[in-house]
Image (tube, helix red, strand yellow):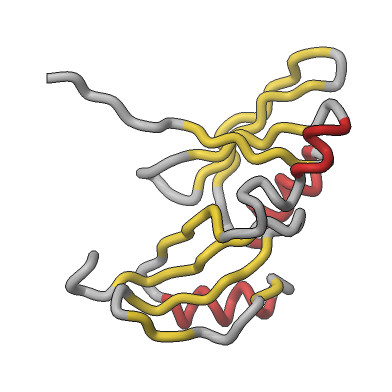
Length: 133
């Protein structure tokens, strides 16, 4: 049997250090790697937890990439941050200045609210219902 998984998803950012601060200090992600590659390039990987997909934070290098910052999914929610305690994380992130675009709402699949990362990409903060977990 073939075993495959998605290991990294690239998130284009304007600068490395503000992106690292947002994901590590505000959202509580772990900085997995920050390696200098020369000519101002770095290999920066952050992760929300021990399992799951990591983000490769890639600084834009041309006007086309710069235009995509904050709208990598055309304005739709493109990232889903799952939690085991929605109200705890909603309160904590709100206190840390995370911009939520709506109040929390209960859906059939769980408790959810949309927020923006520091570049403007939309994320769902979600606690799946027990039936859907």
